[in-house]
Length: 620
Image (cartoon, rainbow, N blue to C red):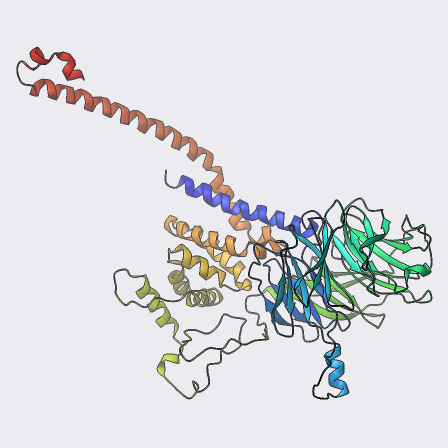
């Protein structure tokens, strides 16, 4: 009877994981009702950095030149207020004032340097992150009452625009950190925004596409043509609207067409003038705007199915037939049965035959500059990306700020694998040499685990959670049963939860496999492993859901649960029968005890008791 709830709970946890994986894939594809899923944006102009938010809610900025992680930022509420959209600010200009006269090369570097990132959250706030400082710049809140769906920078002024589910648009002043203006944009949620290159017009997508005059906040034009939520708005030309040369394009969810609209001076712009054919709904768009009729629009579109489509078109009027892509790029693995590798984002370069691609996984994308022959209609690239998820990989992580450890701090163990940056102590601490700074061996750490697990011993040193995480990773790498047994023997839920939270992501899948293997053994060990499995699912479900072959990798665990679930109904019936049987035995035993007590009182009652008190006194 004590194991029946265990079977039910164990089955519930695993099925919840699979359900969350399905929901996560749906949310990543559709973003709930409209969004593009996980944000992924290249920095403007130089495209030196790639900013993205993965399933774990962290902001990661990768350097596309050296292919390494440059910065990592964890918002304080990254789990409850996940990032919904990202937008790079305009390149930072050199400050004017009495400063040291710089060289021309230095001035050019400062002028082209990117700094601020705007992150919209599900809680209705906007986070401004500084890549130069490597820290939070400011937080813009208390204006939106719904999810922030889109953020867009003004190209010249220090302004930011945000659209939300509350159907409003907010104009933020970054110098004061407060809302400068707020107005209702539509009856439906605002799903996309775009500011014109001259900074005078604003496009917003809700129930319809509206073009606003930013000076008066009045509607300049309205465009209707999409039946689903518009997820992309981009200006395609830089010409003013009074010359019939201003074009913009729009893409919507569940729509395999990109529509191009012309802003005409006479107002006869009810329908789109050009359409681009896609294989699926657009997820990431990059373009080179057309400055004149003689210059073609260059467009790169990454679709939901992971394919890249390249277009070139001269915007000089309407075109009735939808345009097919000039070239389609796909990527596959190097296995015997090739598996498609999804493209996350693509950036155009000044060279028409060169592209910057990001593909693979959002947690650790692969960036590569490739040469594409656009004369071929279909291009397939083969790459090996499975090594990026291996456990023994070494990733160079360069942080902007190195933590400073004072003289009172004591370093017990080195950091987790993948973070090889040495911890620097305070000034003067390097001169002192003591035996305390010596790294403990595996035997000493196991001994401390045994000492800390004993109860009633005063002064027993307690091992920190970091030690458990390091030992667990070492045990998984070396497959040392002694180390794993010592780590898995703990029964403290909080310690298990913190240990699993500190395990690096490449070690999560081997940890699940080890837990699955141990759950097939002794029942007592299986009970302990349920706690570890629960902690893994609570901490790393988003990472497991991002794996392409989750069901295959967790097939053993799935089949084991299936076999145990088949016995659940039989055990439930047996439990009911046993409960009824024990209830009847208990009632019959109670009736026998009552009969015996009656006989005892009849025998032990004094003579004449019933003559004076009556037989009712006894029965009462």
